[in-house]
Amino acid sequence: MQELHHLSVKRSLTVGGDRFKIYLDRKTIRNRVSELGAEISTDFAGRTPILIGVLNGAFMFLADLMRSIDIDCEVDFLKLSSYGAEKISSGVVQELKKIDASIEGRHVIVVEDIVDTGLSMEFILKIMSEYNPASLSVATLLHKTDATKVDVRLDYVGFRIKNLFVIGYGLDYGQLGRNLADIYVIEDDS
Ligand code: IMP
Image (tube, rainbow, N blue to C red; front, side, top):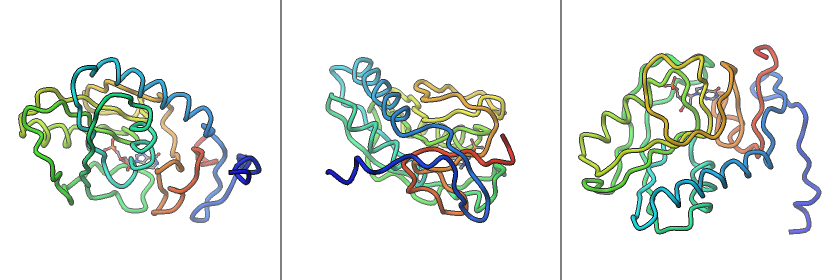
């Protein structure tokens, strides 16, 4: 693991032809994700929640969040259609992959990378509630508070951010940038 110590956080980089600068570094993210995991562990003590990760963006947050949860829990995934390479949410979403698990009577925590307009989350919560879970909660790493158009209840929020386009830690720009360990903001928008 020696080589990890030589990894440094880049201050700025280019992805898809656009310049991005550092917004939330890996340590800040790690600390906050641990706090959310601890909160979930306390809130769901004595129960076995199932985390439903929203593909593709939430995979990295979900993996770290799950490792911070110290009670029994399960995982499954769903996938919505993406907005393509656009930086603006079109709000048009479709279910591309359904969950495999049976969540009737279960404590469900939907795990998202980012809530922007909130339309995707509203859609997901509608689908999930049709399965009659015992409880339905939401964990999102990021929430663009000023961009949210619909009233969705967010139980666990990592960071409330401005209406800025961000990449990294699972979040993409035309499918690129998901592998970055830190979160970057587009330079034009900030
Ligand atoms: P919403 O339906 O507008 O809330 O959008 C949610 C989805 O849009 C997220 O799951 C992301 O896939 C995508 N998204 C929204 N904002 C950003 C961003 O700043 N960077 C990358 N993806 C984003």
